[in-house]
Length: 259
Image (cartoon, rainbow, N blue to C red; front, side):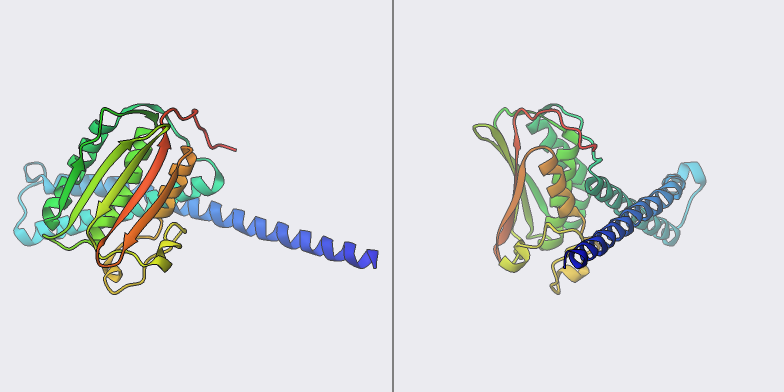
């Protein structure tokens, strides 16, 4: 009896080790592919930007300019996808680093709104700031910006052009800063709310089918916020709107997730 149990345990252990090896190779392969894709994107984007500046590369007619703009837009989407894959791999491996500094929250929100102004204008959506108090937080400015960007991109996909409104802001709590991104879009069902922070999860609705997302953005948000010692959650009502909240400690201990 004892020998059978020992043999079973040995087989199970070997099976687990094989699964770990397969998972490790999968992560390494994804990382390698992402890096290989990232490298040629740099000259592609560079030359396309030069073509857009007609004083550098010569004049183009409207049809040619439209084609160049389409190439640029597609290359940017691929660049974002590659970036999301690399960030996801770092989170899974525990190698995503954080660089903390004193962050003026009001200035950060102004910067985010400025960065999104072109797409907001194009889609005729309102992006407004709920003026926060004088808030300074010791945290990673770029990572907080990344979380806001992913949440705003998500909101843009679910609000109507011209009628859509997205509000971003922050509240000063006792030991944490509570950030939020609120929209008046189609909302998220209770079933989907339980799943949306999972890697590659996408909401399956006729509206969201038009999206170009990878299903990585919200999973990345969760990984970043938890890496900063905080938490993230969503509150939503269908046909009314959605609010994503995330809290970060005011004085986070300097974090490095390398294992």
